[in-house]
Image (cartoon, rainbow, N blue to C red; front, side, top):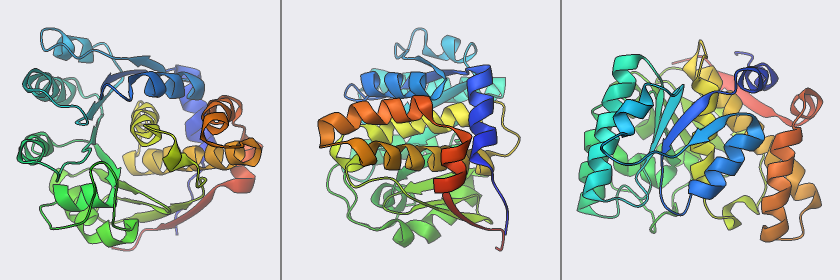
Length: 268
């Protein structure tokens, strides 16, 4: 068993305030920016193909979310992923509803070939990205996270990266190690784009990290604890959204020590 301390990773994010470049969907831009600011990072949304790759060199990390695709955006996504590889900056792929249409499947395959450092998606998305038949209804998963473990391991080995499968219990693997992160709150899926925003948080935790697997697990653990804290005071989805930002902003070592629930296995 391996020990991961989420507080150490959170402290690094707050101390360095990494600039995270996000090519994300129209629905997620505002919430992702607010979540990144609350956790201590600096968000940027640069999508134009004429400048996106150039901007990537200025950022500490990159996220690519295929939620609202267009041909010009796909060109910018590929260019920024290449720029991230050239500059050595980590990038995270969020394959939203990748199995829903041919355009999404083709785009997902092209981005997958550019070896993301982390792939973050729900179980149905991870299964579809791996080329398997799975469930899924639009952006929603109809598969439990555990059902995607084999697909996640294959994708991690294919990209030499990390795959995070988020759900009621999150799974993270680098093809060898496997972690499970418990926590969160039932209201989290009732607030749109919290999953998309998590992708940005993963990127922020990757910036400057020595171990991508540990940084990803730490990001998910912090998110889950913030969700629990917000759920303690929220009356519904609206108040939860506000409470969640406050919980991220005020997240402390003590709460992480008491509430974070991680199971990490280093066996193949």
